[in-house]
Structure formats: C-alpha cells, structure tokens
Image (cartoon, rainbow, N blue to C red; front, side):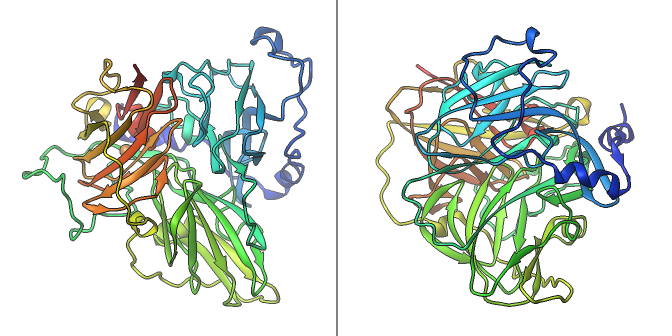
Length: 493
Ligand SMILES: [Cu+2]
C-alpha cells in the first residue's frame, strides 16, 4: 500500500449534504438519562445475559451516525446515543452507577472510564482483561464513582490502520463526578471538547507545538537519528463539540458572569493550544483534580486525554472567538464564538501572546516522600518501520512486555519518563493518579494528573502509590502511537 492509498483510506466518508434534512434529527437528541432501550432488542438474545433486573442509571448506544459539523459538512462516524459528544454522564462522588452499553455495530467495543478508580474488569481496556461489549450485544458496566472531578469516557478499541475505529470515531463524552464540597462559584458551566475529524496519514508533522530550541532537552541524543520519519496522523477538519467554528450556536454570556469551562481534548492525535482574546483563564483543575495554585493564563495547552477546568470572567463586552492559536486549525473549525448580550458585531480573533504552557506553575513547593522504588521508562521511535508507520519502543520493546513492570500494593513508586523522540507524548496511566515531581528539571508538587505530556526529548518524573490492585494499562494517548507499540501493562505482585 503506498502513501496515496493511506490518504484515501482516511477521507473516504466525507459527505456533503444539505443541512435542512439533518437538523431535525439533531434537535431530537434523546434526554440524558432516559435513552430508551427496547427490552426486546433484536440481537439481545445473542449477547451476554442481563446482569440484574434493575434499570441502569445511564444507557449508551454505540451506533453509526451522522455528524453535521457545518451546514455543508456532514460526516459519518460511530457515536454514543446519536450524539457527539455522547450524553453527559453526571454522578455524585461515591454513587454506585450502572451504565448499560448497547453495541449496534459489527465489531467488539470497549468503553473506558478515563480518570476513574475502577477495577480492571470494568475499566474498558482489553489489555487489562475487561470483556468487550460484543457486536450487536450489550454489557453493563457497574462501578462506584470516584474520584470527584472532570472525567470522561471513550472507546478504547484498537484501530491500527483503520482510521474509522477507536479514538478516530465520535465515541467520547464527558463524565462529571460531583463532589459534595463544590463551592459552585460560577454563573454558567460549559463543556467544550476539542476534536479533529477525517484523520489521514502523512509524513508532515502535525504537531501543533514545535519544540522550542531553547527548551531544555535532557533526553536529546548526541547524534540525531538519520532515518526518515514515517507516517503520522493529521486531519483536515476540526470542531469544538460537534460544530466547526461559526456553525453552531455561540456561547452566550453576560458582562460580569463567571463561566466555568470544562475543556477536554478528545482528539486521536493532536495537542491543541487555545485562547480567548482579551480574556484570561483561571485554571483551577488539571485532569479534573484541583491544583494547589490556580493561575491566570492567556493560553491553554491541552493534549489528547487531558482536561483543563478554568473560570473565565466576562469583562470585555464584544463578540470573540475562543479558538486554536494555530491558524489552519482555527480556520478549519477549531473554535467557538463567545457572544456577550446585546453585541452583534463580527467575531474577533486576535493573535495570542506566545506563552509557554508549564504545569509546574500550578503546583506548590513541598518535599515528596521518598519512593520505595524508582522505575525508569525510556520511549523511543522507530521511524518509518513496517508499513511506513512509526513504531514505538518502551524500554527497547514494543508492547507486550513480560512481567517487566510490577507494583507491590501499598508501595510508593517514582516513574521517570525519558522521551528520546522528537515528538511530544501525552502519557496516560489507567485507574490511578500520579503527582508531578519534576518536568525537564523543574520541580513541583501537588499537581495530580492521569495524563502528562512529556515534551520532545524531554523528561518527566511522577510519583504514585500503588493502591488500585489489578492490571493497569499505561500508554501514549495518541491512538496511533498506542496501537504501534507505545504501551505497557503494570501488574500487581
Ligand atoms: Cu505518543
């Protein structure tokens, strides 16, 4: 298969259609908690038996659907309950929750509960031993909702070269676990998922954030890799939620309001930087976990898998574009109009200051308890390997590894991530949180995350306590990197 064939594979389902025909279907999206599931689903007999006679708290139906990104841009994809993002799943911390997932497709699916402390067989990862939701079958996921904060759910199915599976589809949604202690110091709450669509393979580097030569690169080898780069994922279309910039309803605000924005990067591959001209974001939580030192920033950088919660004070009346800094991404849809009451002018975009994103400014100064064990993890790229796709090594091997990464329950581990590649990678650990200890030599404390970007040739150190027994998947959250070797399984002894 040559490169042109790959590109064709990625753009075969774009359909241009009149908007009018599709609008009613979108207006009738099912209500959040009451998606009807017929008791006599035609294929139910071939699926797993129903676990209990109790009604589920939520139902998700995985099925093909159309997404109208703009009046002349309609895509076919696979989604949850005919919505992109899927229905908001909102629950109380500590609540026992049952989610019934009905799979109306021909392939097994996995729904992963990203950022939750759930057992391996519920977590939604094949590698951890979670059973699939069978094709034309159903499966009930039951768990206790914890910890509080902005979580999300998404397909964890392997895609490999099929750019219409897993994270390349519309199978993602917000999952909020409300704490009893939320002070609620805001007037409006909005959910904004950043997405790219119609992924294709290319040797052009899609990285939004080119490594800054002045960045410390502690893992940079003395001699550069002479091998030509292989194919990476790029995309021609972008949206926030299911709409390209200007195609959806604006975010309507009033002067003096405080807007709580829940940002999620639900992309399969791209790190994004966004800004709202004339406004600042007060970042209060990263990956759903409150930060020790909330800070005002002009630009938010967010990688696949990450969440940023920020409060924006509306004090610059006008009509603005909240959008990607990168012109091509914003002009291809990555943005939403923010409209103050009684303002009708054209939406304004202004170039954002070139501020670096730095997790450590949200941390505090505090000593970290000494770890019981330090585990070094080295990540390397094999450029242009088989199929001209880059392959990825963890400690010299592609997944799987043989009993190489073992946790003992109750022990404290320090993981040192050595990124010996020229790409940034959002590294995600399932079922656990880690605390940032150091990023490229800068110490910090108190920043708890489940996904951390290790910059090109950079190094990050995180601590975690092994307190969630069971198989635990670790991987790069860029779908293609994960599928082509960039993952590892931690076992409990
Ligand atoms: Cu990666």
